[in-house]
Length: 598
Image (cartoon, rainbow, N blue to C red):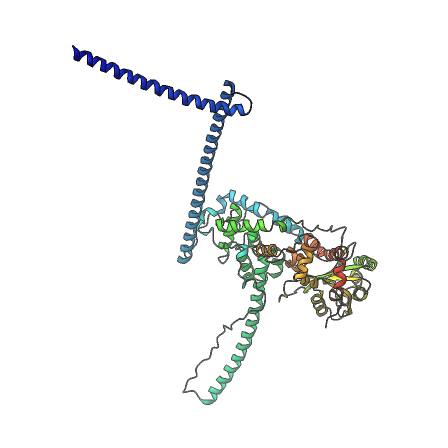
């Protein structure tokens, strides 16, 4: 009995101790919760208000809204990553396809296998219509300049519509060459060395022949050798002239001026085929390749039909091979660094009817005479000439256009009409419309010798030398040009430390501009264009400089370019007088001199 009561009492004591422990833990937890609540309420009391249930719910809604925004942004980021991965995959697939096409073309060129069979043009009318759209604009332009009759724009001829790009996949990238990848040796128009490939053919004499017969045979061989030497010399001269012409044509095609020169320089099929093949190498001249191959009926010629197809396929697809990402980044960096150059406005073009006087007969010469005689302050001088002296029949003059600009108008003298020999053989009616060489010589001699009028030019001494050789009987080109302001000296000053400081030239930016222009067809910025950019803050285009100045009538772009080159010189001089008069006075003796050729 005693043991039972003791066990019960012990259990009661344990239970009481457990209850006390639980109560103490609950009290400590309540104390901690109350402490947190006090701290929470203390934060609100700092701002003078107690949190309400509405505020608590509002805070919870804001937190929920922010959480939803974060989740949405994360989803957008994942979508962008997926899109970028998909674009990269497409780019890699495209590059693999292009590489496969290139390998197929290379294997085909190595095997020298013949072209696939040509499709019948009578069963591909859609192709005929596509090709007509490519050349319609060029044919309409030529019809105006060359007096051609209206051509059939459907071009439904067997010699024109035989090509279809679907059958020539491996050739798509053939002859591809960007403008900036032209070799410098190809565009050199100077003299080249040629080897004489002719062989001397001498026959051995029989030992049993008589001496007299042998001497006669030797004499005949000597005469034949002399004839062979003359033939070899003539062929070497002809080969040299052909090579120089082809060098000029490379440079002309590279600058996209082949339409000006094609009719004049395409003297035989060899030159025509060379022009077609060369035009297919540049994306800017693919249309010219198609146009002249059609006009010369050389589309089916084995020596150039592959090049014509390349031009057609690229013109139809209007597709260019994508550059690598590194090159894209490099070009983008150049564009950013040259933004100051790109943002400059272009020089305003002159009005052909209001601002330009083209002198090619006696009546226009009288108008020019009045304009030039009225100028009392400053004139601009320039000369446009051919890219080279071509050894062809009825070759044009080397010096073509003489520009004399005044403050009001620009006079363009057509030097093809300035010739004293024309008046001798011409009839009286025709001679009345020609320019009198004596009057032309007297007018320029008086203007050049007037020291009260400033003459502004860019390296005009070299132009005077060319003019004096072409017109040795004109005293105006051999006399002194008084009070002549040389812009080339100003350009040399700009490249000095003092000039860089005076005109605020950024040397780093100039380097980037040179790099950018070196990747284009212009290759570099001309001296006059550099002066215009620093003095007038404008960009002067020199695209028409290499065009065919002997072609008549001149294009409007040619007239505007020739007139602007002389007119802009006057604007440069006026800007120097107004804003840089101290500099002009201090360098007057070096920049403003009397010019005379020796």
